Image (cartoon, rainbow, N blue to C red; front, side, top):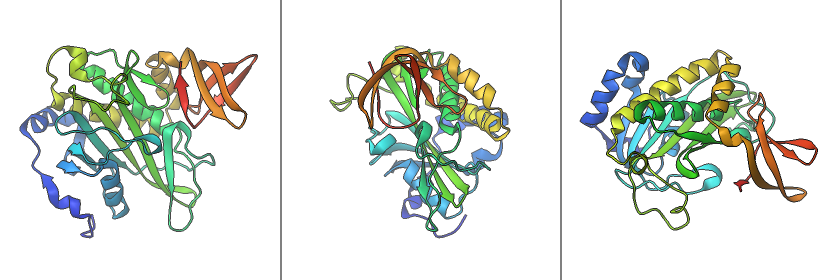
Amino acid sequence: MSSNLPDDLAARLPLPDDLRQALARAGPRLGAVLTRLLYFGTVSSTNDMADSLAARGAADETILVAEAQRAGHGRRGRTWHSPPGAGLYVSLVWRLDLPVEATDGENGCTVQRAPSGAETGRVPLLTVAAGLAVVEGLRAATALPAEIKWPNDIVIGRRKLGGILAEASARGPEVQYIVLGCGLNLRAVAYPPDIAMRATSVEAELGRAVDRGLVLAEVLAALRARRADLAAGRFGAILNAWRLLAPSSRGSRVEWRDEHGTRQGMTDGVDDSGALLVRVGGRTERIIAGELRWL
C-alpha cells in the first residue's frame, strides 16, 4: 500500500477485544483478510476512506470498520445515521475481474468516472450478492428473520435494519475496484425524525444485547462466500438464494417515477440481471434504477 495515504489513517486504533476474539474464532472462513482489517473510532465515511485507500493501491479485501461516521451516506447521497457504538459500519475494497456494462446505477451500484473518462455502468449482481450475504451473516449470528428489500435494504418486517452501498471505479471497459459499504443498526438510538418510524435495530428486535463481534465475523464470512460465487459466475445460486430472502420482490405494490410520470404496479420478482420486475396492467416493466416507494 502506498505511503501517500489519507490523514484519517493516522487515527487507526487497536481492534477491541470482542471483535478480535470473534474474528479469530471465524479465522478459517476469513483467511488472510484479517491481516488487512483496519479499525477506527470515528471517520467521515468508511466508504469514502476505503475509496481513498483503494485509489492509492489498497490490497484486495482490505476492510475498514469504524465505531462512528461523521458523514455516512447511502444511495443517492442520503445521510446514514452513524452515532458512536450504535451500529456496525464496514467497508471493503474488492478487486474483481468484472466487466462494466452500459447502464448507470443498476441494482444500487454506482460506478465513478475515472480521470481518463471511463464508461459509466454497473457491476452485475454485486449489490444483490452483497445484500444476500449480509442477511445470511446476520441470520447466522442472531437468528433474526431479516429479509432483503430491493435493491439494497436489510429489513425486519417493514422496518429498516441496515443497508448496502456499492461504489465502483472504472477505467475504460474495466472495473478497477469496488468499495462495498454496509451499515447495520445494532443498538436502538434516538433516530432522526425522518427515519424514526422506519428504523429498527438488532437489539430492539432481539430484546437483548447483541454480540457485535459475532455479527461482524458472520457477515464478513458470508461476504467472502458470496464473493466467491460472484467471481466464479454462479449467478443462479446467488439469485435463487436472494429470491428466498426477498419476499417483497413478488406480490408487493410499488410506486415510482419515470419519463411518463408517477406509476404504480405489483412486483413480480427479479430477472437474471437483478432488475426488479413490476406488472403494470398487462405488461411487465424492468426497474433498474431510480426511486421506488413500497406501498
